[in-house]
Amino acid sequence: MREAGGVHDDDVIADISGASAFLKSLPTSNGRVAGFGSCSGGRHVFLVACRTKALDAAIDCWGGSVIQEKEDLTPNAPVSPLDYASGLSCPLLGIFGQEDRNPNQEMVTQTEAELKKLGKNYEFHSYQGAGHGFFYYHTPGYRQEQAVDGWNKIWSFLEKTLSSSA
Image (cartoon, rainbow, N blue to C red; front, side):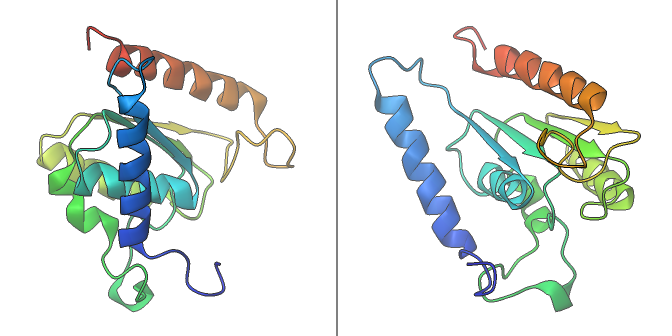
């Protein structure tokens, strides 16, 4: 799929929106849904949170290509997700490794500055000594201390944003 340019952004948005509507319709649901994504999934969660009201919370773990230069845009990803930041419709948690290259710290800082300028509800955490995918315990990039702290931040964020009183 990557060699073919990935899934079209509009298809991702439709799929996640449909999944969210289904989850909210379940009798066991409190009517609140979070989106969680890492790597390209983090980009997708950011995109859905900015283009729809399908999510009540969004978690972007080292989402690459949230910022794209014009020459990096493709027919399946025709707009840089950061260009949609004004539409962010739910709280956003960002977890990043400072040694990552996509997104690198400059990109994280640029994204945070845009969200702050727009008055959006977000919190970002960047970890020293961690790169891309530092939660993946089965890879050489795994960083236990940073991953445990990141997961604790995720659980706290979900409790705050998805509880019935949120």
